[in-house]
Image 1: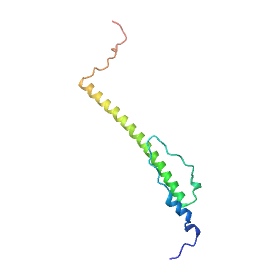
Image 2: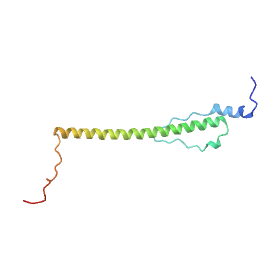
Image 3: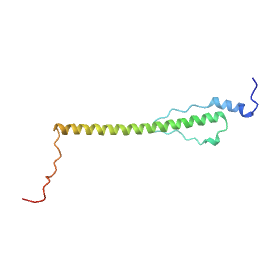
Length: 112
């Protein structure tokens, strides 16, 4: 089989080396944001830089997803606790364990 004739299909030596030296994203610790890199999509010049850019982008998306998931689960847990408390209060009222709040008697407005 022949080698590709276009330079775009032939990997250059530096980009191949860069591809092998791309570091995996570090573990994210809760409450601590990773350093923001200034590499944008237009700054990508080689396959190694592209891999690094994509890895960085995916790790940022994963962190945002984890943060949003945590917020949603926290909200659901709070609502669940409130519903449980409401159910318990209703059960107590049905069984007469709690005195119903007393309100002033509603009269027809005339004093006798």
